[in-house]
Image 1 (cartoon, rainbow, N blue to C red):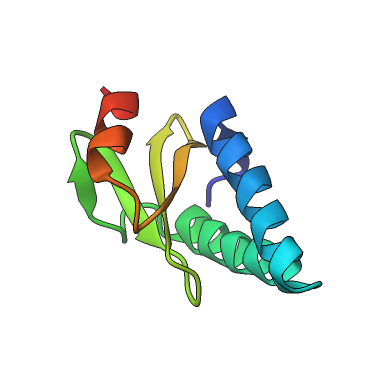
Image 2 (cartoon, rainbow, N blue to C red):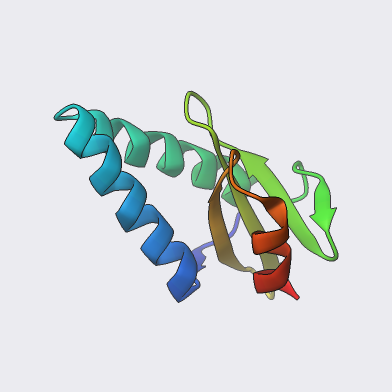
Length: 99
């Protein structure tokens, strides 16, 4: 199992912005989003190769109940999350960040 999880600054901002957006729509919905994110990260930590490689060497895991994908890599038992990307956004924006 992977013990250490790191967020790229862009991914951290995406999480904060998404939390704020959901919370502004309905109190508690932001917490539901964070819970789905935590559940997905927990699954990745236990089974890091379960998710397919989606772009170059980045794997993509989908959140349950929310239209987001986590793009990540694992190096030396460290999980690094590079993006928490809303699935309706233009994927070219993500590709430019991950190059």
